[in-house]
Each structure stands twice: as structure tokens, then as C-alpha cells.
Length: 303
Image 1 (cartoon, helix red, strand yellow):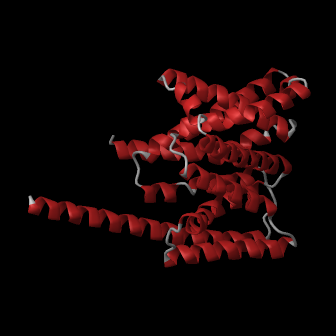
Image 2 (tube, rainbow, N blue to C red):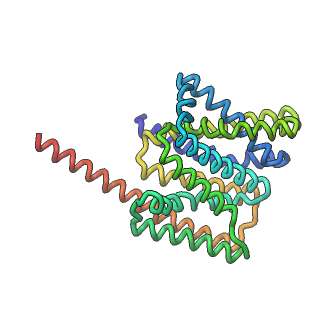
Image 3 (cartoon, helix red, strand yellow):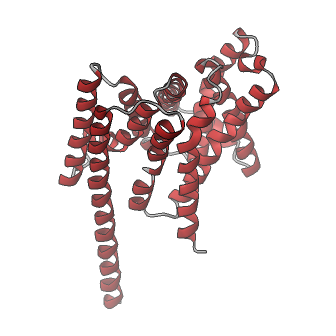
């Protein structure tokens, strides 16, 4: 099996874990979301610290926080990812997993828009159409529900802003996330201490599940990082939609959440936006590949 095929398998595995994670957090519905989040931060830090120790890179953690700029960026990233985790856990526990899946569909399209605003990246016509369709989907759902869909908006904005910050950090994914959860630790430990052990009071089953949330958080991220180095960006962009698709199927088929005609219209618009966006990404990737091959051929002729 080639490296690209291994990367695709790793990417599918990471997205499959993320897509089914709602089932895990739904099983912890009797534990308040702030306690679940606190344990997730604690055991994620333990997991990532062990990985860095095994790799002999634990010193990189101190280096990541050594400059004021890096520490501020990591603090903001920590705030955004903790907000994202908290909203997702709360949405699943309260029966809004369908809206949560919509947020993860919108996030890549919102990232494109933020890339244009923050970094001056050009927006292609297809990307502009995809962003417009995503905005229309949110507007339709807002009208149908009689209120703004705060869950998908908060999830997509927090994760997109997280991506903007991450783009400015010259750190690997494991070091970066370890530093982020390290900054969360004081608050997480305070919540665990003030609640007398938090979810651990529910017995050994709850304790084991809360501890395993560290692996559930860390392992797919490592698989994703492995895949990103071996799979073309266009392919990564398309396959990432496996995550919200599985979240949506779990919400509707496993949790039996209500799916109104307004949801149907909004998701039809979102899926159309995803199709336009994915087709454009794959076409750009092929064009870049042809240009690179042509440049290689010209270079060979010159030699």
C-alpha cells in the first residue's frame, strides 16, 4: 500500500471517529457539559504529553509558550477550541446534534471567507457561490425556526477563527494542541475540584469514559496530521465532509432528532454548496498538478 493510500485511510478513520463522537458524549448526558469539557481537557493534556515524551519533544511545549505573541495566539486558540468543544457537547446532550452537524458543514466555507478577509486570499467564483449558498442555508433555517441558529453559527465561527489563529502559529499539531489544553488546565482542574471530582462521582464506568475522552480527542488528530502530510489538499478538503455527514446521520437515525422541512431545505442548500466547493477544489488541484508537471518537463528540457 502506497503512502497516499495510507493517508486516505488515516483521514477516513479520523473523520469516522469525529463523526461518531456524538454517540459517546450522548452516553454522558447525565454528566454536566462543563464537567465533561474539564475532563476532556485534562485527559487530552495527559495523552498529548505522553506522545511528546515518547517522541522526545516535550521541551517544544515550553518553547511554544516562550514568546508573548505565541502565548497570546495560543491563548486565543485555546479559548476558541474550548468554546467549540463545549457547544458541541452541550448540543449533543440537549438534542441539537443536527444543528451541530450543520455547523461543521458551514465551517470550511466560512474559513474561505475569513481567509479572504484576514489574509487577502482570492475567492474564486465557485467559492463565492458556495459561501452564498451556505449563507442562504443559515438564513432559511433562521426563518424556519423563528430564531437565529446559534449552535451552527457558534460552532462554525469558533472553529473558523481557531483555524485563522493556527495558520499564524509555526507549530506542529501535537505541540500546538498540547499547549492549548495546558492553558485550559487551571480552569479544568478548578471545576473538577469544586465539583468534588466531577463526573468521577458517577462510578468507575463514568470515570473510564471521561478518561478515554483524552484518547478520543487526541488519536483522530494524530491520524489527521499523518494524513495531511500524505494526501493532496483537495482530497483532504472533500473527505473532511465525511465528519459532518456522519454527525448528521447519527443525529437523525440514531438520536431520532426532529428533521423539519426547513432543515431539509437548509441541508439541501448546504450539500449544494459542498458539491460546488468540492468540485472547485478538485479542479484546482488537477490544474496545479498539470502546471507542476509541465514546469518539470520544461526544466528537464532546459537541462
